[in-house]
Image (cartoon, rainbow, N blue to C red; front, side):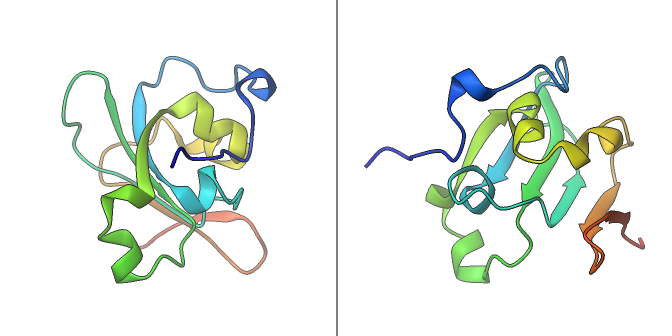
Length: 109
């Protein structure tokens, strides 16, 4: 069954172009949730930004099922949660979480 995304392609704006692709949870892309946890790992290839986006409450069972994640252009995920844009140039190893106030905050390493 095809995924039914929370936003339609016609709704997407150019918020963060040129960053490459990323992996994002269906809880963001299908359910329309905000990014609750994001981290940047080493890129798997030259087009991979290294960014990985989660709503933050995915169970281990959910996170271990690849059907719950897909590859997206970073700009697409930015349209779902524009708050991530300010962090996209952070180096590999960076991680951010959404705190109680609703703001994204750097995670302690």
